[in-house]
Length: 104
Image 1 (spheres, one colour):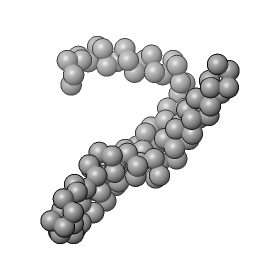
Image 2 (image 1 turned 90 degrees about the horizontal axis):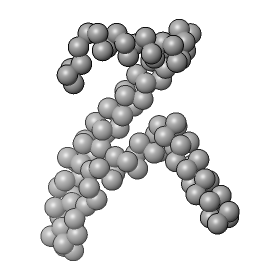
Image 3 (image 1 turned 90 degrees about the vertical axis):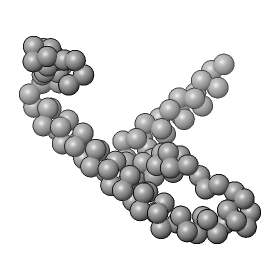
């Protein structure tokens, strides 16, 4: 696994335990698991939409020669809508950029 041996993994686990504490680890694991589950769900929805919309896109492409948006950009939009922590982080970044503009 990424060239890490058991000693390195144990050392990383101890550092994480010291940083976050034993009480927060289950919460972190639950949040991380939920985020991964939501990401997989969004990916599955997008691939299903892409296959169903493929025939529609082919018809559009023949009419106006436009390519549909890439899967990556659609996935980013979907993740921003569906995963609250990501949306919150993006909102905070926008606010920070606004503050930078005001300061400078």
